[in-house]
Amino acid sequence: MGKILAVTNQKGGVGKTTTCINLAASLVATKRRVLLVDLDPQGNATMGSGVAKNELERSVYDVLIGECEIERAIQATEQAGYDILPANGDLTAAEVELLDLSSKEKRLAYALRKVQDNYDFILIDCPPSLNMLTVNALAAANGVVIPMQCEYYALEGLSALIDTIGRITEVLNPGLEIEGLLRTMYDPRNGLTNDVSAQLTQHFGDRVYRTVIPRNVRLAEAPSHGLPAMVYDKQSKGALAYLALAGELIRKQEKPRQAISA
Image (cartoon, rainbow, N blue to C red):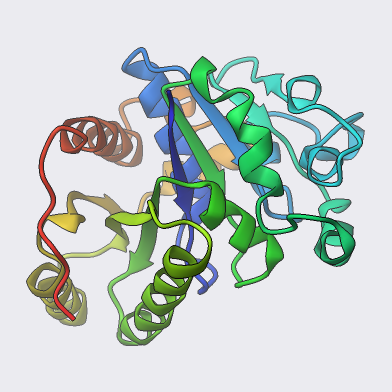
């Protein structure tokens, strides 16, 4: 049964979509079967995977509101190697429509159960806010991957996110845990970066991935070509970093976790 990971942070611009696309492609490179779920109405993960979001016949929106079985909405990406449950602007309407549906927080979880055995990993790209879509992602997931920049305001936002995850665990999904914190856009020459990084490691221990994602031009360029960096330039520092992250994620599945101190 595939592991479901929600990639989320309530702060925008921290590399959630970049992480989803490139981690998915890197896991495929290690011979894992991967499904990427685009749960952001902007549809950036869809476009970055080479799928035209404005030409979709079926999307995650149709799945959430019950108009389409998930198997009919999933598409194979041509070059990236993973499957995707795509999204576009239609998903904005789901935020309102879900409020009137039964089991509104669990719609995604119920849908993913039907295909979970087909994949080793399912990655969910969440919108940069705590709304009903993000709640659906957290209710469906086994673990949460939190991409974040090592800056002052990131720590404040992280505290709020952890509180949110705690509430979801209590009310909707008792099996949910923080899978790992990923330091993105990392510049070791920056003193604040190093200070924040040290605080993260002190507080979260082995839940901070050892792999860091550097600022990298290829990572920024690849989405405009509808490709993961792994396909666009597999020797780039960004691509190699995400490949290392995939290896670390796979290895961590077998290790016991240390508790997070309050």
